[in-house]
Amino acid sequence: MELIATAESVNQAKSLLSIGIDTLYVGQDQFGLRLPKSLTMDEIEEIVQEAHKFKKRLIVAVNGLMHNHHIDDVPDYLSKLDQIGVDAITVGDPGVIMTLQELNLSLPFIYDAQTMVTSAEHISFWVKRGAIGAVAARELTLIELESIQNKISVPLEVQVYGPTCIHQSKRPLLSNYFRYSQKNEATDKDRGLFLAEPKDPETQYPIYEDQNGTHIYSTEDLSLMPYLDKCVQKGLRTWKLDGVLLQGDRFVRMAQLFVAAKQAIESGTYSSAAYETKLYELQPTNRPLGTGFYLKQPGDVQ
Image (tube, rainbow, N blue to C red; front, side, top):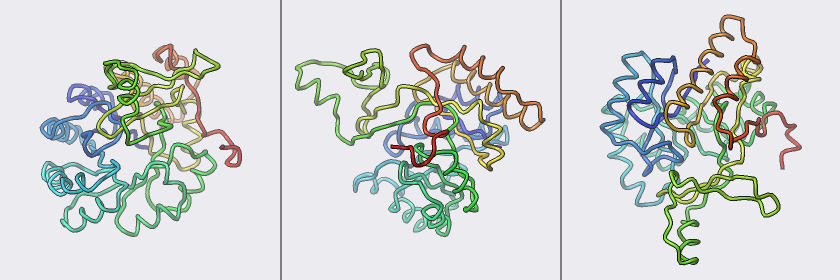
């Protein structure tokens, strides 16, 4: 089993490594999507060094929706990541994959094309072209994920904790709205904006802008804590913890629960109830926990 966790800073990365996280996930907004914080190359290099001290890995997000001006900057970025010893990148744009191969870098890539990664055949296409893993679309059910994992030769990453992005637009929708309303409001993640259903003002869909556009998240945070052992039985052993909306020490303590759960599964002593209780205690009160699409029948996903 591999536990991957996002890191918002060098200090948080060190904390996550110290509690037993296997792999860290970071990046820069210019090239990666929906990161807790956009880190500098110096920060990424320091985190690489820390991870390797613990004999752990660092993955860098290069999974952005690339335009021509992004691609122009990709060769230098990839070369620097290779030079500092990054263990792998996530990437979904064929242009970035082609650039990676043209540069003849030793930088492995994990295929991450967001919602498009929904079949074993799709993944196998990129495995034949060098992918060492794949990130599954978050809209897939456990039935579908098991079927895909059984048909491919690389690990399939499954999100087991965190918010799910339900919409992205490259347009600055919030800025456009505030400009139309003649208001001067911040639109970044720290502003804490959310959308509510017209008929249910209590609902909260987090929304923010960054240089990749506008992002809207689900009303609940995903948690597969009660089903981690079931994931293992189905061959799904690469787990992602996403702290994009949960900052600081609270996310580290959340991650520590999943590390303990993983260790209990390995030792044959896992019982989900105690971990679920602790998870609920740490979870922000405005973010209910749920299982997303995972427990649904494939035909029921609308």
